Length: 205
Image (cartoon, rainbow, N blue to C red; front, side, top):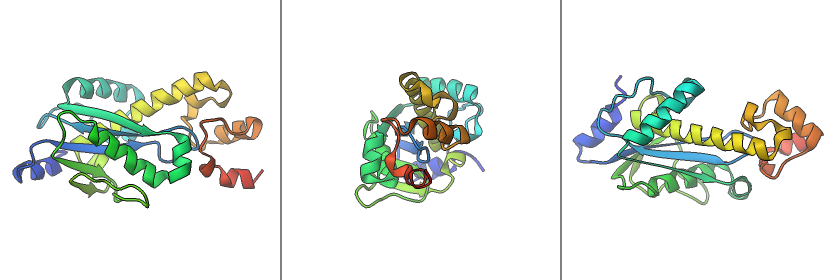
């Protein structure tokens, strides 16, 4: 299957500027959730483009630079950890994706969205769109958006590691690894931990 199949269907129905959108960082115990939105030139060849989780960090950095250079438009948005606690992660993911789409210049006519959810209790995707399960490995535009979101989030977590070195965020990027839980036991939560994600850990102390 071509990575352009969904985009081609959109173009053939008159949608000129089709973007892909995806998020990164829904699962970690700490840090922002990021979303990327990208409009690619039609049939742009990007060697190795795939779901960001299937691409090595070095290759992700290379693709990140190529996408920024060659995209018709790209944007990244995020939601802070305290707001994730306030509105929950589903609403945060949707808010971040819509914010990234809204930042595109030129704006998109239509969005291809990774996943199967387009609304939460407080936020919904307001742009014309369709949901694609496993879209980050089935659509070139969504794969590119996943690279932008993942690289931006990883770089942010490396910056947070400098601010809070005791948590070693550069190693686990905020995910709930054995090391991360051991450091939480030792130091307690930092200002960028998602308190709503720590309930089981707090109960087990």
